[in-house]
Image (cartoon, rainbow, N blue to C red; front, side):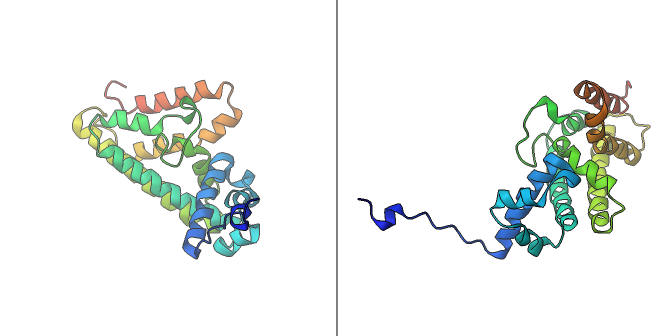
Length: 213
């Protein structure tokens, strides 16, 4: 017969406030990146963490505030990924193509660094569409401006190297690429053959950057 120690359930590790908030945020990134803001449920976030919904609201106040924190978190990951790409050898045009690569080419996405920021098209599309909502406005603006700024830096690098058109204004070009990302969820929902369409839209946007475009 086994002892009480052997049969007892393992004790659940108690998280401090910062760890609890971090675990909620990580789960929310997963839920909202997959389902978007409106379809993503706080109950699904709570289930992933193993807490009740009131615990989520105690930490973040509202679903909108939780989503805003998710947008900030993923924007930070995207910024780190773009910084990593910028530090690597290779053409800027090639690095931009990698960053914008549609997620369907790789199937399941693993984590916020997966294949640049294409994996988070649903999340960013929702954030930019909801920019008029008070709790989301600043987070969406920060994310958009941060990502556009890094894309513009990559474009400037490509212009200096001669593999991106010299006559382009880097900032509008960066916003064009960001627009391709932010409308990706729309095309996935309504376009016939969305994978083929997405590949074509991405290729057209990148072709505009090419000196031969």
